[in-house]
Image (cartoon, rainbow, N blue to C red; front, side):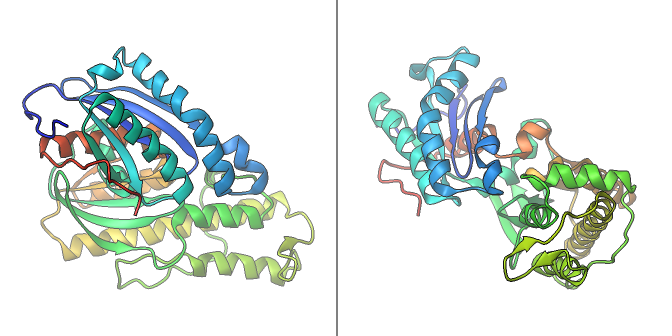
Length: 347
C-alpha cells in the first residue's frame, strides 16, 4: 500500500465518524476544504430511553454506514477511486459503534488500496474550529460535549496537551441528566437553554461552582444539588429514581436558568485561570456539542473581548459529532505522513 503522499498535491480525504449515536461521513480536500458533511442522527431512536443505548446505536450504524458514505461521496461529486486517504474515528466512544465505522473504513482501505488513518474523536473536536476559520497558535480550546469536557493548550496542527479535564460528569451529560430529573425530553441541552431564556438567565438557586483553583471540571456536584432540591420538595423519589409528580413549568424555568448561569461561571473561571497560567495565549476556541448553546457562546465571546484576545467557535454542524472534523484531522496527518495500517484497532 502506498503510504507516502506528496503534501503539496490536492489531497482528497474521506472521513468516517461513528463514535456514539451519529453515523457521519464527509469529504475534505486541500484546495476546497469541506465538500460534503453528511450525518444520520439517532436522536429519534434514542429519545424514548432518555439517552444512548449502545446496542441500538450499533445496529443503526450498521444500517446507515454504507448509504451515508455513498451520500457524502455523491454530494462532493467525487468517487471512492478519487479519494486519497480514509480517516476514521478509533477512540474514544462506544466500542460497538466504533467497530462499525472502523470495520467499514478498513474494508474500503483494503479493497481500494487506500491509506488509512485512525483519528482520536477528541482531537477532531479540538481542531473543528479550523473548518470555518483560522485560529492563531497558541490558543486555548474548551471542548464540551455529552461525554467529555476538557481544556487543551494547542500550539500547532496536531500538537496539543490536555491542561484540564472532567473528573466526573461532562457538561453535556449534566444537561441530559438534569433534564431527565425535570421530566424533559432528550437531549436536554436545547430544551434547557430555551427554558432559561424565559428567565433571562437569572440565578435563582446559586448551585455549586466547584473548585475555582484548578483547570479540571466537575459537574457531579451540580447534578446532585439539583436532584436533592427536587427531593426536598417531594418531587423526586430516590428509591424509584423517578419524579413523584410533574415539575411545574415555573420551577423548570428557574432550575434551567440557574443551571446555565452556573455552567457559564464554571467555563469563564476556567478560561480566566488558563489565561493567567498561559499568558502567551492568542485566542480561545469553544467546541463540542455544548458549543451549540448560544448563551454560553456569547458569554465566552464577551469574556475574550474584554481580555482582548480572539474567540472562535465553529458553526453548529461542526460542533456536534461530525465527520468533517475527522477528515480535517486526517488531512493534516496525511500531510505529516502519519498513516496507520490495517491492524488499526479501537483500543
